[in-house]
Amino acid sequence: MKQFVRNIVKVLSPVLAGLFLCAAILGYLTPDGLTVTAPSRHFLNGSFPLSLQYEEDAAVTASASKQDKPSLKATLMLLGFFPVKEVSVTLSEHQQVYLGGEAFGLRLYTDGLVVSSISSVPTKNGSTTPATQAGIEQGDILLSVNGEPLRTNEQLSDTVARRKTSPLVLRVQRDERIFTTNITPVFDTQTQSYKLGLHVRDSIAGIGTLTFIDPSNKSFAGLGHGICDTASGCLMPLLDGDIVPISIDSVVKSMSGQPGTLCGSFADNTPQGTLSLNSDHGVYGHVNLLPADKTLIPVAFRQETVQGTAQLICTVDDSTVPCAYDIEIEDISYNNRQTTKNMVVHITDERLLRVTGGIVQGMSGSPIVQNGQLVGALTHVFVNDPTHGYAVFAENMTDFTAQLAA
Image 1 (cartoon, rainbow, N blue to C red):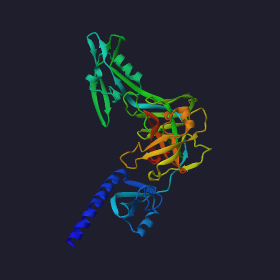
Image 2: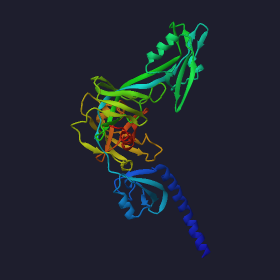
Image 3: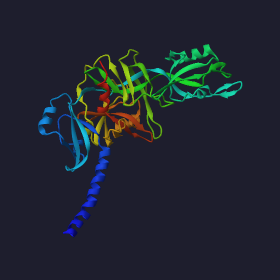
């Protein structure tokens, strides 16, 4: 009997070790919380041998389903019997939005001045770097000078020219930290003017793509990634801004190692909407008017997105109507730790490849549709392979539009 037990243990030990290893890996790969329309044991569309086991009994679950977006507790199970981890399950209907795909112009004005770069200044006593001596770094945000809020580059330049070699007091933000520092202008012998050795940015303009419009509060989402200063990589702090119609004149095709771009100009300076938020997940704001010629489409929950064929909706010419192009969703990251690069997509449509060579700048925010639902938005191109890129879950973007008051 003892030998029999030892044999059973010997057989089961590697099996149990394998289950523990699989559970650990799946616990990392899967989200800590998800949203569903009704309590269900299915998880990730049945793509894995995973299921949900709810802590509440049937009566409690049925009662909770009648509340406003209730949250239930459940255990993620492997093969129906092996626990992986605890998850929270929110009950909610699919959000209905107007599908985007139109290219638009962006004008963003910063809250403070972004330090794009720092340089030395030639003086009669040799080169010096006032900004570095003051402890200022690339990517810092200059909030005020001598107690006066900073809004434009010219404002800082005028203050330097007026004060000459008198020290200035700068209020600076670096990440979450705010501090003050003194900086003294020096006389630039080449330009014959007083300088700080700072290159700052107070605004930025460009082209992006609209992802969707939420009809409940006229909010919109676009880009799928934040607007950053190209030199420092710093997310531009938004003071205000707007979106305007764009006219696409031409396309520079993407090649390996060299991303292309949509080339265009503002077709009309009349704003179509205002910007309210610039975040890592995209730009958000409100449109002036809701579209009259669009139908609503449901936003998929993240676990409803699966590997396989999908359609990318975008505009790459001067047409006012976005076109649908075939793509392949090749990889998906469902966990909560990855909030922006949730999918790897592959452009497979020969029509789009002939025009763009793959993904080009300006296509960011292009909505991705799968099985009749909005599943995500294009965000980044793979520089060495422009037919591939990253996309963000549309569900992640709706979390931001829901926060915008009408």
